[in-house]
Length: 170
Image (spheres, one colour):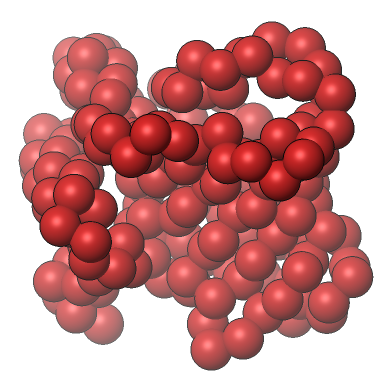
């Protein structure tokens, strides 16, 4: 479904706002984990991290199939890590050449200095207020985000943050 070196499209849906489409190069796809490489223009700032984008910046998106969490790692041209953003979303759907999910607004960041924090809870609350996300789904997103933050702080594997929810969906 995702040959190494092929281009994959990612649909980051927010039905109450808009869908962001992006693409990247498939670096690997093994054991249900899709890794996509992206490069960035030197303009603007990284979402939730706030760091300025610079020439030569690049990143990886690690996407476990069916997961409520994906990981974005951003790097400077010299390889230094800028930070990590963990997106909380509906379970990821894989289709040939396409990755799709609905963003649930709340994210977790791990900064280059190791600090971990849950961010954008106010965006999630607003999405619930306008009817874009149900209260139940918002509670699930918050539970996963806080579990993920705790796992990261304790040195655990980020892919375990949604285990209980994946088992329910199966």
